[in-house]
Length: 333
Image 1 (tube, rainbow, N blue to C red):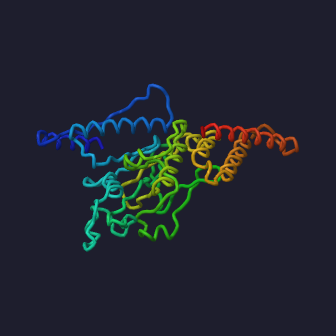
Image 2 (image 1 turned 90 degrees about the horizontal axis):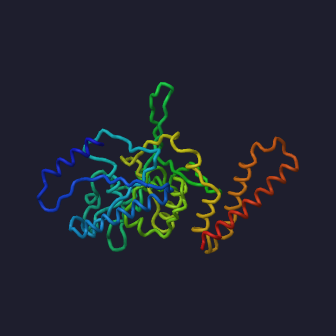
Image 3 (image 1 turned 90 degrees about the vertical axis):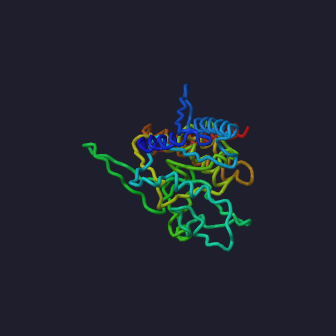
């Protein structure tokens, strides 16, 4: 990656003076005070928006050009491929940003960028004849493991593997349906939740209605991101046979970062399930979260299942449920 970056800078230097020129840059933002994942993402996107406006004012960037954001979790790294001509960015760009229009009488397959198959999910047109791009791309996830001698092995994921959540908002493995896979011959398929790495357009992120900076963990931030993409846009796609893949080291993030606590679940419930007839569903989620939290909190406190133990559990559930309902209510305001 460093070699490729250096090479592109040299190529740019050769063209310096030919119109507007700006070399590749990496801007690192340091958080002087601790902040959660959602707040950190929001601050980074704010900086990108400022930089985008400055480049437009300087004539370096056209207002019609959109930028691609990549959210990469700390336990993930972009998978390396032996291809000097194409990277994940090419595949993601093909999926997110397509040709603005197409002639009805021309062969559609000739209009796709290289690497994009005509039978993929994006082979659709809107009413005005323009191509419909993907809304967001969740990278396929491979995992790594190492033995006692430090040898690392990569375990590839299978086509159709996705991530979803249960009634307590906890993550659970899922898979695309046969119908979803058949629509694109397995080239792309939707996923309920994004994971590890997500690419989307800057304008898409700027249009999100919800951005709760109190969502501190990776999973809670990704959960809100997924709700934004599904309920206010067109969802999330996985590009199966592309370079949009990451390798995840499962031991880097703690279990709390991969799950959601009761208070954070209550905040998400208040944002997405209040009103519109969803209150009953929201109450069931809060009750389920309270039951799980209560069971976790009394593990080891008692060794038998006497009536007193069950009463402790029931009382704990009621206390936690009341607390979560209060948090959810306060978050609405």
